[in-house]
Image (tube, rainbow, N blue to C red):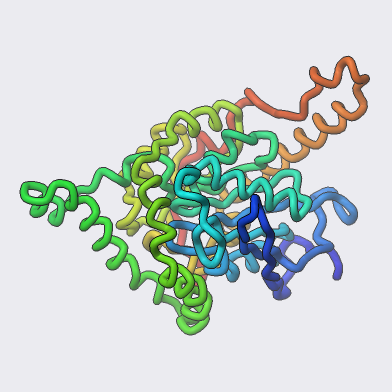
Length: 352
């Protein structure tokens, strides 16, 4: 199969696999474009991306989107189903934390031979991306942070339901509002001209999650207690490119959370039409952002530049004598934050 040129139009399938990490099965898929290459041309290392799903979802729900990314950008794409979701075995309850989940992604990248990658993190996956980047900055080319749950603003629920229930059921008011928000967000999954294919893409992982709902509850509890603001600040300080993207009608991780993230990072949010899971019924949307929107193109350029810096540092470390190897560490840290940080907030119309 030839290398994939930018903008090439041919279908790229996602091929499912299973891998065992610490005795537990993890389901994942990899784009079939095995001969894809990097921006330097044929024979160069391809750019990898990891598509990290949200809570009560699975990697299979994002296959159509990842296929579009592989086809349009020439990237190789890895879609994991994180522990406890979509048929992947859960972590023991005492090990359910964001660092352990991120460590599973490390194992999968090692399995497919990807030294570094772009992380696309949606909702809970955004928190996993932040934790991964904080723990392994040298392996991250950039983060597309999508309606993410790494900062705590989304847990501070407001509105009519909270106002009515808080005086009598204070512990349940926020949970009830979140449940209603999830129900109201559902119709956004059913828009577009390809309803049947959307349902077919969502149902297998949704069915697996419904069958094993109890295994995901510890992860939900973890999310409710999590606050990764310090990790986000460290990532920004290291100059890792970040592109925040948010559905303007998101009721689950609200626009207030988007503004919280923008204030924390100094990076304006790209607003897109849709709810919390805008990318599922519009699987071409993320590729369109990265190819056609100025902010998206700047992010891709920053990713390519960071990749070149990491490869050069790695090469320098290999050339250095043993006594100087430590001084030539391939970690690129403390760099000037990427240009996208000062860009103007944008809105786009996704091509349907």
